[in-house]
Length: 219
Image (tube, rainbow, N blue to C red; front, top):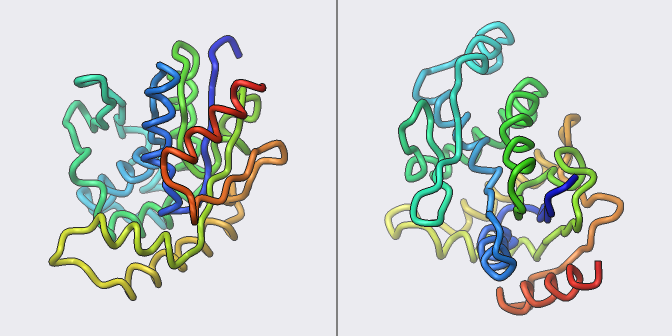
């Protein structure tokens, strides 16, 4: 691998997105939110009313889907058939659908090429759930970021619009997603054997990023 690829895996609410953005800025490389790709698939499944549990229907859907990351103002936005869908993919409903549909091998296979093509030409920080274990097993440095469930639920709760706030529901949905992601047969959520594990429960974003930079400089 000629480019430098850093992977950050971990459960929802551990701080992966903020940490990945900050780390990529400090390293002067691209940040790629791979979870957005799965959310993009989920969004289009919902919009097109696809029966994603029907193999034939799913296969036809994945063959035609056109997801891509486009650079706008130094940030990658997710497009579907050329349309920016970034603002539509962060709802709880899409999150749960993304968790369920991402367990399907055909979905994961369809998105591998997009991720690996980016890595061929750019130094990048890839955030996700199986970046270090499946997508980039040869990554330069791999991290697994985690935190206490209650803390993660509070973080996600604080990000949500007032009208949708229900901390108990957020925590329960997060617990269900954790279980789904870590017990699925295809690419379960777990640290790579050579991943550096960081508990962000009591750390600030800056402290996590500085820790990571310390490990990267030693690699």
